[in-house]
Length: 235
Length: 388
Ligand SMILES: Nc1ncnc2c1ncn2[C@@H]1O[C@H](COP(=O)(O)OP(=O)(O)OP(=O)(O)O)[C@@H](O)[C@H]1O
Ligand SMILES: [Mg+2]
Figure 1: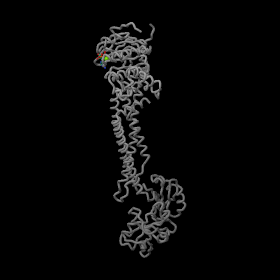
Figure 2: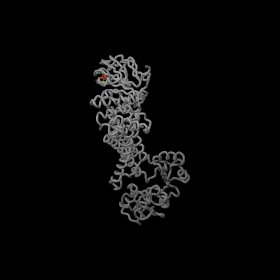
Figure 3: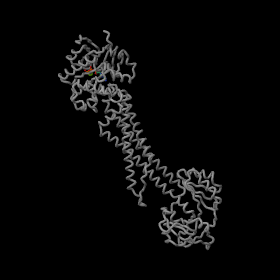
Figure 4: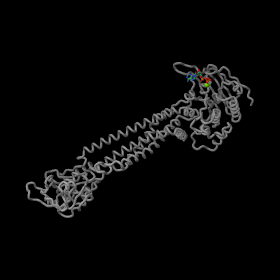
């Protein structure tokens, strides 16, 4: 016990629409510790993406609070939140979301460029090279991000999410479009990073086999948390 | 820095679109500079033809007696007025040429030739013979020569008093001039003051003071100063503007229509950029969403598009300035005045016009980027992430 929650939801509900209302989340209370490795599962339309987006401060809850390292996000301005996301959060989206105008390498260093600190320091370059090696993309790093395969794009997104050494990586179906072998490789990679860097992962997946390899499974049904089980960590 | 990295890459990733926008702006700026230079050049040429070789301010007697007495001290004072470049005293009057068979009324003008030439510039236009050098020597204009079939050495019998037909003075033609203005060429008989003193019997009195100023448009103000401070009562001071009101209002109408053309060109350029950038924001909304999710703040997002506007503005304007100058040069070099066969206007660049047009265009491009930039800053990440 006693490890601090990096992200916490308190009584979070989300209602979409004003005329036709869709209750996507109802009274969700969840905390995520530093260095944890969790899976969020549930049927299509159950509210997983909604939950992840609220956790990532990309969306706002209708009621309830989101806390970042104990601080309420409602007290933070949009610029402050942007900076927080840049420094502490890494995103891996279901649909890759690389910038098509840039190369693989440039996409990976983008989170650093956003800091707007001028010339790229050697250390950051080295870090990007290291991450690209880790995800096995050294060969294609100077290709345009649209001229590589789907799996390679996914791995590029992983390297990008890790560049700033974030505290938490939020991943929405990160292996959604990948074959089972590649899926396996990607998960081993995420696990490895979790162990080596202490990065917390929150992974949305509909793949139970994957979920079972994590330390904690949270199941959502109709916008409510119906199951939240911890599995004894092997580490 | 970050915003410019992104802006430059967005633009270079779509070179065709970028080129067309820059070219569009360049055309707009080129048209502005071309039209502005053309109208400016035409006005200058016209102004030069109208008042280039005439006095800008003429001081004459206001009474029936054309003579001005005691003129030396006022002339001295006028020479000292700031903005005045040349002051010429004239002794002139109408004369009847008895040996002409028609159109026998001429204007006999007595000058200090060297001094008067600073305003009228007729010495350089003498195409036959020489300038008058002693009493009773005159030069006449080309039209007069042709009309009356005159040759060097011919004599004109001048009569100045209608009631005394036998009191005539003979003057000799020693040269022919052509100042390019028919009204002068056909009417003026130019001679020395010594000749007019004899013919009109005015002694040392003169009949008018001719003044040229550095800036023709300041002539009216200078005339007012001269009239109120430096000339005795009984004289009238007239600036060229008072006799060329139509020309001036023509200039004004022309200038206004030029400004309107320039304003409309500018407006269409601004609307073009603004709508193109608005489309670009939509085209790039996916990228903007990703960038914002990764922590790009609203200001950086809007700066991307302000910078795109600035790059379009600077690129398009630079190209447009060259294009506009080139168009104007082509026009000046190739379009001839059908009357004289010389160029219709001279290739003289008005750098004020060019710099002001360029500055306005660049600023307008940046302003045009403001509304797309605002859209970019307001773009919600979640909309983009959700809609894949
Ligand atoms: N923008 C929106 N407007 C209205 N309703 C929405 C919106 N986005 C999601 N919803 C609704 O909210 C609920 C939860 O959606 P969400 O995208 O979180 O589901 P999910 O668990 O991620 O599903 P999937 O596994 O298919 O991705 C669904 O009923 C969905 O229809
Ligand atoms: Mg989803």
